[in-house]
Image (cartoon, rainbow, N blue to C red; front, side, top):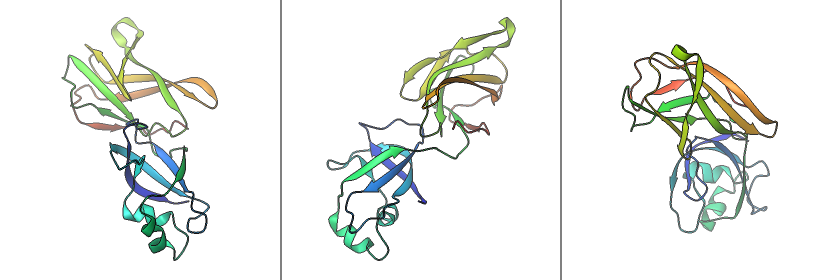
Length: 188
């Protein structure tokens, strides 16, 4: 199964985390058994569809030499599942953040089979973790974040249960709205 670019997903099932999903086409005479992996980065509305695929991704659902026949279907039934994401976790400072009084962050590539269920930021001056509020979807925010480089701790829920993962120097002290920071770990 190969990765087939970036795609949109229905707003009914979209969580903006840039997750990886495996799609399996349910037209066995035309579709591969392996399916195709897609990275979901946006949502959109289709005509009674959950996924909006590029021509390239749609054709990769097909068996060899069957892409034109599959394209003639237009829409096909699919099965999908979240799968492990082999990208580093990244934190995007949401565009509505205002330095230094309001921080909203989005966890990107949080691993397809895991969910971040809590987020905290280390407050060095009082030596304690401060909880962030889950504003919506994958957006975590807080008023008056600590000064300086920010260390995060996230609680991850998945097939292995709950675990806490500490992320050091995630966001620099002079963070900017819209910036994306690579954490160099994977939450698998």
